[in-house]
Length: 291
Image (cartoon, rainbow, N blue to C red; front, side, top):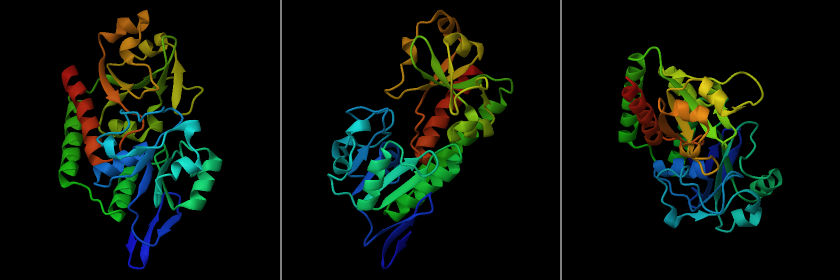
């Protein structure tokens, strides 16, 4: 929200970031930077998390053009001086609860907030996908961007199409969100903990849930355990820290793989109508093919 006397925006923590004028040199966590780009806001820099490496993970950058964006790095490479080298006048970070800035050491985050206005958007399980999307859209408007009308129409169409595809297959197939960790094990997402997976359930898709046990967001399973869930569609984590599903050569999985349709999935999704429409469209494709 812009004010005549300056610029301010209340973030998801209830804190108000204030500046003399509308920020124009924005540094953002990769997920946030890609989301803002879909609303017409180009960040001058982005940074990653401990899962990332020396180059941006293209599975997470969406349509963000990287040729004019300074990637600051990730994990232990990030310190206050590195983050501030482009002289950003606003930092946009994400949180998975409790207001903690994801991807940053707490001391680094504290020093950063002492140096530059910071906006944090909670993308964790306590939020709905609509909430996250609307908060990013509000921030984009405050930074001079907008939500393309065609993207909103595409999202409405993708929702309707997925709902119809799910209604036509009341007995399945079961959708499993999976992050392969190697030949020994995989991480199966607990659907209720992921806003974008809850949307699939709301639209009628049948989701496969791993057994209760250790792990808040993920259950660690061997490939026999994955096959036992009998997925018909697998949302496969395509981030660089995940092992490509095509490389898994475990007999239990290979026996099931021929019956499974695979959809690329980024567990750190770009939170814009355009990106959501694209993801729902891929899931709808898989459901329609299963029919």
